[in-house]
Image (cartoon, rainbow, N blue to C red; front, side):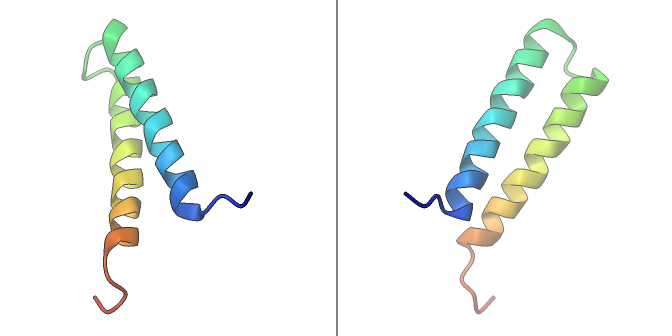
Length: 57
């Protein structure tokens, strides 16, 4: 079975989200690790949004 790039990206988003929530559960929301994971998640979500946009845009 072939996994599409969009499916791989979705899995990365979910993993990053879980990692961020886990880190935030025992650290401050402004800790370097939580901020790093938040920025990483933002980048992944921005990349995912590009997949959703029609090709003509």
